[in-house]
Length: 465
Image 1 (cartoon, rainbow, N blue to C red):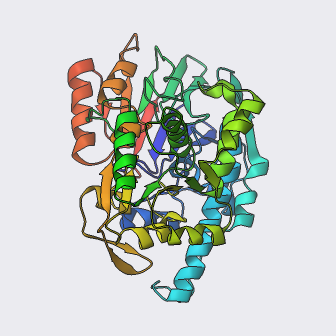
Image 2 (cartoon, one colour):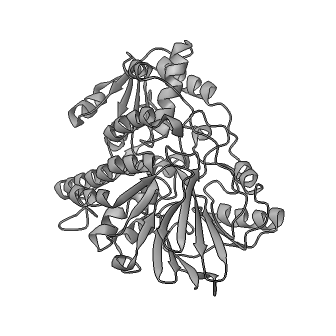
Image 3 (cartoon, rainbow, N blue to C red):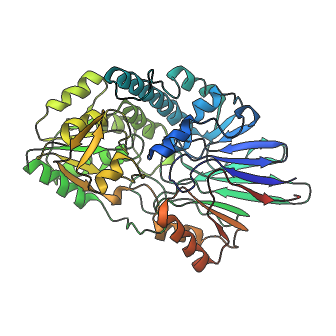
């Protein structure tokens, strides 16, 4: 039995996570994400899939973020009909996030057709909400630490990766006629000291390791963000402005609610309304009660209801309510998605808030190359929204301590737990010079054999198992 991998995404970019594993007569896809950011990457979503989806027997998902799951409806639409394996929270989150992704695409296609800023005569969504629903009957969900047989010779175990509710490190065991091998996919690793999520589980051995590289060669100290959040809120309120926060609907939005509630209770920031303007974030917030064993913040049902029913928190459920927030002149906080500002309700808020000198836009997570968020971090004077160049007159803050990704120190600490070096280590889910330097550092410090794969490259993992 020979085993190989074909890299269909997340090579030289932090998005489009897709890795095709061929195991004798069994073919599986690890992650099935959408490409985001640079146009040349986004166009890959529209390319024919590099292999016939009908020839893939199973998909294994690390966690629910769209750059790891967002291509699933297209894969199913084009012929895949096998099982999709993930953790229990990931299954629920995908039910929310894939429908939201489809809805955003349909709305964007309709809007671009109406406004005429698309180059296509009849702009279409990559997939519809109906096509997203076709994914759900294929999902098979499991808890952490339970061995799952996905083929007579292949099994998986999900371990806690931190990072996001239900996010998993995946151990893939292959039993050949002559020997047994283990592949470990790190997924996206969380922080060692996160306010809500557990630290990533310790893994001690692997024959092949796929290691995420988002922060790879960059230190991002996990200092307590409370003082920075308090400063930003208080400065914005003194300016009689509105604080606008583009946030990932799952994970970052809930973490921000946690901190704002704490800071208000401690009288460190004024008790102003916090508008959670993301139906997906609202739905995901309730999952933090349902799956309390998957995170560190514990509360009873009555305590949860009390937390959700406060003067400071307003759930914005309708588009009409969302648009009415544009009339707010000050003394308010708006949290809206998407976190990289690639679509969703955040765009109309930015359209209206970026030109306002008294307002503040707070960037609270990693921004991929080519996204509006990255352009704001880099200080672009204008941002293109709805076909127009919008001036950036508001204050822009970038709070990296809220990132859900392990930084360089944490990644090396996690890898140091391996008792023996893996035979091969693939650096994935990273970009640019940072990715190259990260690989070099692993070689120098750990003496591991590191491979930085190229898009569509195929590599043999094991021969004659």
